[in-house]
Structures are given as structure tokens and as C-alpha cells.
Image (cartoon, rainbow, N blue to C red):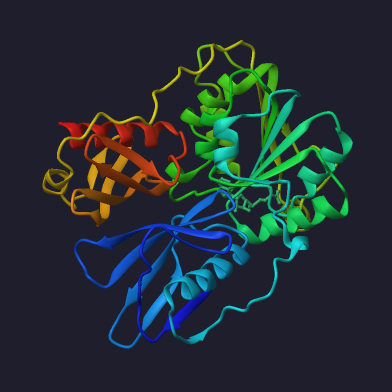
Length: 391
Ligand SMILES: C[S@@+](CC[C@H](N)C(=O)[O-])C[C@H]1O[C@@H](n2cnc3c(N)ncnc32)[C@H](O)[C@@H]1O
């Protein structure tokens, strides 16, 4: 990661500007004097640079939680801060190369915030869970140009590989997301999905609670599927197949079909391997027969008004507050002004915790620089935080 190794750290008087980069304020770690965050703005992007000091080194680098991409922004901001504060750089891994306009983020790569804020519903959506080599996802996208495909993966090299092929094949109807499929469905509006493919999921025979298919996943699938839409499991694991049969039979009314060793249009890498080993392959295809109501609006991220920010630190300890929806934990506290504090939180679901910052000043509390992802677990964590802050 880009960083500067400094002779000593200095601050300009805030707010400060160097060319097209602005520095708004400094937040000092309230527990340890060896860390401070510098609120930085470049072309509408807000993030923190971090100053860290240990016995051997003074370092300036980017903050993990708010780090912008591409890396050019971080490098540019680090050099701008050094110039603005008159820092002496001992060494660094930051070059002064101009922005490489070819390295723009891939259009098909989306963040969960993209879906949470404005889920695309103009055309039929199909979702592939754990696309791996992406053979099936790419084949389907090419064969169905009017359908919008959303591919979910948690393995980064598979995502990079898929993005490369999306560019080579010039596909404009695929979106790719690095996110846990078990949590993704809650961001999908009701009745918009034609098909959900779950092909060769990790069987998790010893830890069945980690499986993608579960009663909760089935219920969310039923909500997001259109009537006659399908949830399609394909697996080589006899145990997973039997487990899916049991899960898919649980709803009061359900229709599903079962196939053994059925050929489909494209064979994935896993499928090729299992076929070579002469393993059986099972399909269990669940059909949704009902229209579902829209998911309820589930609150927002507003806060009550804070009278005494200093008292906040006393009220909120550093203990992790665990609930059935997830948890809330204050990782670090910072001081911005004598009467303004900032909290770094980890919160939300145990499977996909989120880190974020909250600034508490007299009369006003706000997330900075952006709101958390609007998931149920994050909203529940927010409600708990608001209660703690405003009692
Ligand atoms: C056994 S591979 C199968 C890949 C591909 N579907 C195929 O048929 O070749 C399972 C894939 O699911 C991904 N995966 C596992 N759990 C996931 C989850 N909760 N959300 C999204 N992807 C997941 C893994 O990273 C892995 O690439």
C-alpha cells in the first residue's frame, strides 16, 4: 500500500488545500497518542490519511476503512499533504506518475452500496451464486442479452478473471460483486428475479450452517423470485442434494423438480472434474409460485441530537455488544476538537461486519464520510448505537 516514511510529522492549519486536494480536520486517537487521521477530499471523494508513529518510524498512509480506489488517489493525496505540511520524506513507495486513465475501475464491478441504493429493475434479473470460473455466468449472459446477470463471488481471483472475460467478450449485461450471497438477497426488491443459480456450492458437510442453501436463503429467494422464477441447485454432493430436497420441501406449498446426471448447455470446471471421476450430478430446481409483498422499509441512519459528546465516551465502553442480528463494537475513539469526538465502529452481521466512523459534536451526530451499507444488521446496529448515544 502506498506510504511515506517521514522524518517528523507536522500539521498545516486546517482546513488546508494543496492543488486539487483539501484537508479538512485532524482526529487524534484518544487512547494512544501515536495515531491521527487527516480528513482528505479529492474531486468529491472523502477519505482519511493516517499518520502512525512507532519507535522506529513516522508513517503517512491511507486508512483501510475509507481507502479510495484507484491507488492513484491515495498517492496523489499523500504527496499533496507532504507538500502542504512541509514534510521531509525519508523514503516512500509513492511515485509521482500522472493518473493512468486506462486503469479506470471496471464498469461491471459493483459495490453492495450500488445495489442497496438503486437496485436495477428495468429488465429481468438472474443471479449466479459463487460463479467460480464464470463459464456458466458468461455463457448465460451471451445467450440472453436482454437479461441482466448479477454474479456473486467471495474469491477475488475468480472476480478478476470474470472481469477480464467480460471485457474480452464485450458483455454489457453482467454485473459482478464481491459479496456473500447469503446476505445479498436482502437488497433485492421482491418479484424481480427470473433465476437464481447455485452451481456446485461448497458442500460444508461438517459445518452445514455455512451452506448457501438454508431455510432463510430459500425464504428470501421466494420473495425476490417472480412467479414461475426458479432457484436452481446443481451439485455433486449427495449429502447436499438430500439436504436441499428437505429444505425445498419445507414451505407449506412447494414445487420442485429433481434430475440426475442431466446435461446443461455449459459445463463448469468443477463439473468437468466430477464427470471425469464419474460422480453423479444432481439438480434440484425449486419453482416460485407466489407473488410476494415488497420488503418492509427498515429505518434509516439518522441520529438524535447529542448534548454532551464527552459523556458519550464514558457511556460507550469498548466491550463488543452481541445480539441475535449481529454486533456493535467501538474499536477506537478519536478527538477532533475538545467538544467533538469520533468513533470507529465495527458492526452489523457476524458474516459480513462493516467498519465505519461516526462524528459526535454538540447537537449533531453523523456518519463520516459516508453512511454504512443499508443492511438489516447495520440498521439494527445503528438503532442500538443511537440508544447508547442518546440514552
Ligand atoms: C465449488 S466452487 C463452484 C464454482 C462454480 N459455480 C462452478 O460450478 O465451477 C464454489 C464457489 O462458491 C464461492 N462461494 C462460497 N460461498 C459463497 C458465498 N457465501 N457467497 C458467494 N460465493 C460463495 C466460492 O468462492 C467458490 O468459488
